[in-house]
Amino acid sequence: MTHDVVLIPGDGIGPEITSAMRRVVEATGVQINWNVQDAGAGVMGEYGTPLPEHVLEAVRATKVAIKGPITTPVGTGFRSVNVALRKEFDLYACVRPCLSQPGDGSRYRDIDLVIVRENTEDLYAGIEFDEGSPEVVELSKLVEASGQKPFAADSAISIKPISIARSRRIVEYAFEYARRCGRKKVTCVHKANIMKATDGLYLRIAREVAERYPDIEFNDKIVDATCMGLVQEPHDFDVLVCLNLYGDIVSDLCAGLVGGLGMAPGANIGADVAIFEPTHGSAPDIAGKDIANPTAEILSAAMLLDHLGETDAAERIRAAVRATLAEGSQVTGDVQRALTGSAEGAVGTQAYADAV
Ligand code: ATP
Ligand code: MG
Image (cartoon, rainbow, N blue to C red; front, top):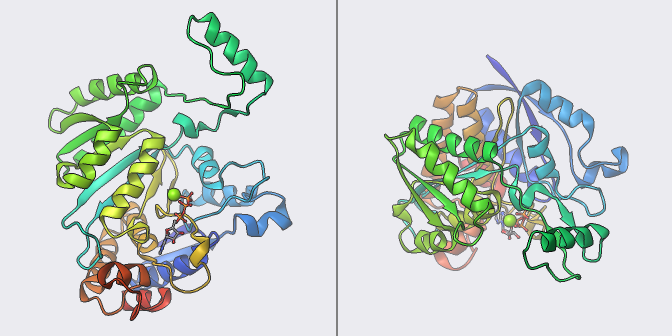
């Protein structure tokens, strides 16, 4: 069977790591009909937008895509092309597994945890007002009328919406994921002791949902304590279900536990559409030099193959990555540097993909 998949190479290191990923996927023998679609700064001139309608149309048709990172050019009317994609298809759950590999260069061993990040609301909803705007004056009046201390007139404001339905949906996703993947525990990450309305609501809903999953252990932890716990005793964690902003930060922290951003894959899942992408951004500092680590992109492709039901090919890719890193003679500069303190002897992006 041939699978139709949209491939968005993206920019920065995107084209290099997606071409490496594509060769690895093709080596499994799984038949994929790649529908390559460009988005980002490169298409601005031609279409006047970094996210043209025909790209959305293509994803709507295949319902599945894999992408490289996309930088959002300033002054496009988009805060983030990546966030716009997640919103367009209501990709509410961002799943980021962090799994130690032998030879990943990390200080930690045997890490095996998963971040489930809410992808659609919180401070990333994109509702913001600049300092001095009329909305800020109006909001300040509302705050005062409610009996709360108004904020300074020169404040900029970001709104943090946290809804009952979306809190329930993400926590349910985390528990269903835990069940499906044989995981033992879900930790709800929050700051409800300070943000009693928003995070308080989220925690309350999480506790309600947890009652319906007696087979899965549940606890909650404030986000600051979670960060400390992750660096001190990461093996205490299994599935972490996080609001959007905490999920962003905790994802990078956890990537650091397993060898860095070049290692951490991800999936954005909605009811109809799934888009796979690494945790990292476009890393313009190392773009075009054939030195980026494509592992995160390659492991994102393994998640894509799982999603397509090609679990055997997915497992073979993971095994090949594991073997290549364990053998250790053909790794990219970030890994080599973590292992030996110098990038000397590292191989390039494409040579590493060949080894895999
Ligand atoms: P975003 O806002 O999209 O998260 P960012 O500003 O956090 O982007 P990234 O592009 O994620 O930045 O990367 C931060 C740094 O990590 C890069 O500048 C690069 O040096 C390193 N890095 C990221 N991805 C990789 C990779 N695949 N291989 C090697 N190094 C990487
Ligand atoms: Mg980042």
